[in-house]
Image (cartoon, rainbow, N blue to C red; front, side, top):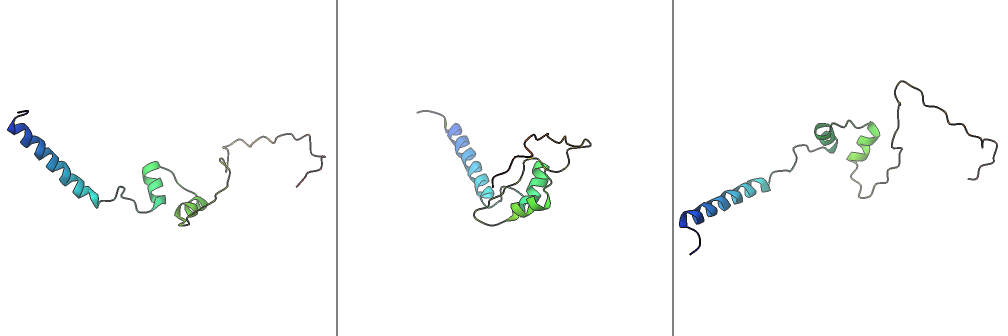
Length: 93
């Protein structure tokens, strides 16, 4: 025979405890927050702007969002204006 009776009883008891923990956790939500914006603020430290909150709370199946990666102020220094040598050329739309 392999293993002692006390070892088998210990393994069985350990499996029983793990099963009870799984049963307890089955009906428990994975996260405490029910609102996605609240989740971002509490867990990630991210404060969404008004348009980002609107996007995060949208329940649509498909969403197309298009905006710049960096927007808003760039600090205390004004952004340098790029020099454009092609101002007099006609544009095609």
